[in-house]
Length: 137
Image 1: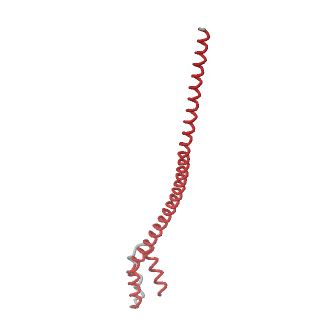
Image 2 (image 1 turned 45 degrees about the vertical axis):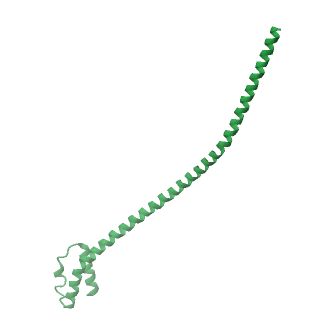
Image 3 (image 1 turned 30 degrees about the horizontal axis):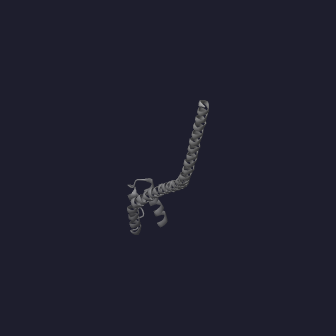
């Protein structure tokens, strides 16, 4: 009877252990299902954020391209402005000389019209004077 009792105790303890294992397996399966349901919105949010980041990067690249184009345009406009300033400065330097040459022409001082203006310096000023004198005389 003692052997019979110890076998029954062993079998009962085995069934209790098996029940606890089944209960733990069901609990683990339930926790896994719950975690899956909780993770799905997080994964969807992660994908949404990844799309937003990709879109933001595309916009950033487009803005970088526009910025580079704007910088190039500004550089070209600055070069044009420098050229225009140089032309304007040459024209301003030539204006008094041309005015005096025109005045000499109207006074019919043909012989002294160019000799008086030898003091002008700069190739562009002399070129403007010669060109203007050729047009008028």
